[in-house]
Image 1 (cartoon, one colour):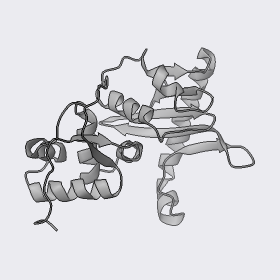
Image 2 (image 1 turned 135 degrees about the vertical axis):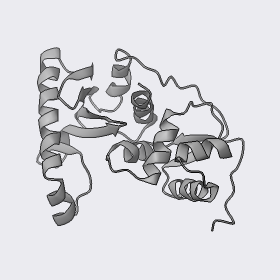
Image 3 (image 1 turned 180 degrees about the vertical axis):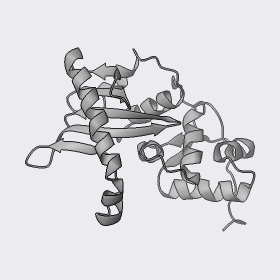
Length: 209
């Protein structure tokens, strides 16, 4: 396979919502996450090249980088776009709520740090947001303490936690996000919808803080 792969020039690499979620939903180091994190930090007007692919993949072996790129394309974690886009990857905390609101069917979501202090909020009252942030940190901590049970005994490899109604529809969901050395928590009220460009834009903005 190594001898048949080549890099197509004049394409702008784009991460899909699934790719963005895979990159930040776990803190386990892998070659796939290294490449995805590299792309999340890249400007949207950067064309792919051999030099940039090697840098994003953190390797000096182009065959390894090409195989990794091919595998992530097959998984639909990324794709090549012929047209550039204009994304603002440097957003302030005050600009994040517009993106957060799009991730919930009722426009309610917030971001908190690992200590439960929220720094961006859409739709929650201030006092409620403070309490929800603390709850989020405690819920995620419980999940981390029992991760061996979940993965090894129950074969559950997802890290999100949710409060559901009797039909199984979530009313409040907690998504731990591992970005660099930081652990953040995305809390979504109502039904979450991460399968959209707003989620990719949010992760890119958080990756470039």
